[in-house]
Image (cartoon, rainbow, N blue to C red; front, side, top):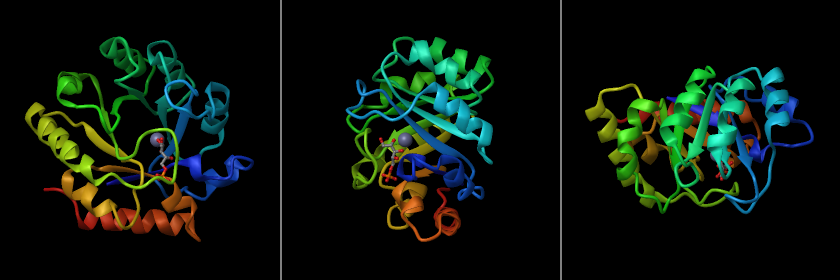
Length: 219
Ligand code: DX5
Ligand code: ZN
């Protein structure tokens, strides 16, 4: 059970300090948005390189961008230890995942709430993680979509059949109120923005979320 706080909810003027607050987490989730794939713009490669250089924990890069085929391997080369692209944006998922892995990172694909995951199950041998979005990508602080839990179960079942060690990540509206359902459905990597950075102590929130996830682990 791993916690990946999203710095989208952090103070963008002090990102090094904000990363320091989550040193007890497993990953630092960095949302790259290009204002095309999603209607929001955040940061890109130069900032990710700078974050990798100062982060106390590995960087988990979530690319909400068009044409990840072209850009995703660069994020792995920049030192992100996990790079996630969206199936709705990618042209050649197999080559893109292989290029990410060849650059030394874990590769992952993400599905938006309206995207059926069944057509992508064949990709499982090519990736290390599947991200099931539990909000429409683009913004932090949205409400958790409980109707995505069957999809998490479906991916867990597919991973069991395929037999590999593929992690299942959920992202969007994950909090102390919603993390248990995600864990029960089979998720094992939890992204949380507002629930961590909106808490009085980010580090305490991370520990509490991990504890809740462990207590409700899928089996
Ligand atoms: C949404 C991003 C999320 C976002 C989650 O498009 O992918 O990572 O930061 O924020 P919360 O946890 O506040 O929903
Ligand atoms: Zn994200």
